[in-house]
Image (cartoon, rainbow, N blue to C red; front, side, top):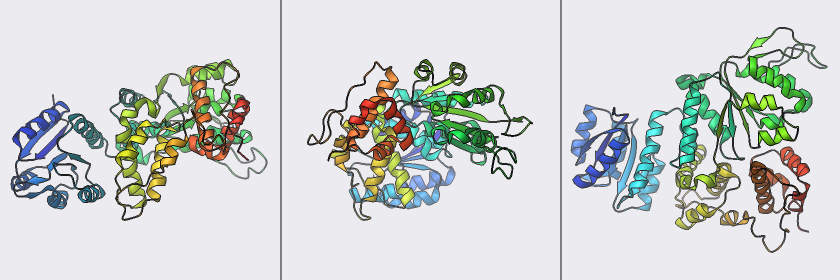
Amino acid sequence: MNASFSCLIIDDDAGFVSMLAKVINQEGGLVTSCPNLAEARGEMERRAHDLVVLDNRLPDGTGFAFYPELVRRSPNALVIMITGVPELAQAVELTRNGVCDYLTKPLNVADFVACLRRAVVRLAHPDAGAVLDELTGDAPPMREVVASLRHAARHCEATVLLLGETGSGKDLAARMLHRLTYGSEAAKRPYVPVNCSALPAEMIEAELFGSEKGAYTGADKRRAGLIEGADGGTLFLDEITEMPLAHQAKLLRFLESREYRPLGGNALREFAGRIIAATNRSLEAEVKQGRFREDLLFRLSVTPIHLPALRERISDLDQLLEAVLNQLCAKYNRKKPLVRPNDLEALRRHSFPGNVRELRNLVERGLLHTGEDEAWLQLDSRWLTASSAARTENGDIPPPAAPTRQLNALDQQEYRLIQEALVAERGGIRRAASRLGITHQALLRRLEKWPELRQAAQRPP
């Protein structure tokens, strides 16, 4: 097997090095080892390495003190620090300064493999950054998603349909597919996300296809549409089931022919790029209820990819938490705090009705409430317990009613998620919509569809 990356291990424990090398070889890595810092300096002079596994206690110094020099010598290498005597201050300092992972001895091999795979993904796709971090996981459902996205990236002409609950990462998957499709050119190609539920019904055609001067009252000049803006790149049609039935026929013709005509125009324009659609609803159920065209369903379902809910891949939680925390610390230029073990356990027990988006919101709020010099992330533990739909707090909000009619599996899932969000937000519809990651109007439409849910939306006096 050809090696896909090179790894330098700096550790004086021959047995431990042999064990690490075996694992790294199995993951496709070519290993070189050095028992001390002096030999490591010589090795780094001779060749560059993609990954460095650095022990902290070495015969001629510490990995902690050597790390700044390592960064100067190998600025592009990812570094995994391993120590037998973990120190909180060191962990905070190293992660703040770019260490990929900080592991402790005795080493859990499964943890090391997970850490190694994250590093390999970052090496293979350095331009994908946070998007890949949030989508890559060791849980089988996520590995299947990533494999499907890689396969779909080879067929730009095929429309991809992303399915999954609100907050499960459909937008991230769309962005990842854009990057995988265009590779190093992705940053130069347009990526145009369109929230179909946010488009004004009377302006959908003009917004999507564009309009010519004089096409409607007030159209005093030609206006490019969203499709034209995405030409040569990716058009992402999110919440596709919110597209009004009256406009679905034109959307179908566009998907089939890749041609469109601006409002008020005569000439056809051609779209050259990738088209991705997404929904958190069952298209089959929407067809049965007369809200979605069956032929449009068939056109969209050429390449369906299902994004699992976070509770279906809870084994990825630690990895996701790390990725989200890294992104947010970079965003706010903050030192990276640590997560208390009891908070981590509470997160693992949480149902996450809002999925990865809820996790991100929770961590972001915690980070903003964490002092600059505090070592621990200040998570709001009340948030973790408030969303349990199985109980209510002090009886303030009555238990939500059951659906008044039989629902299909996906609608049952959506119904339950809305219940949980309304209970957790103590009846606040706007806050529940934000928690679910949908617009206020979209949640109101769900409440019109399922009026019994309004019982959960009644604020206590």
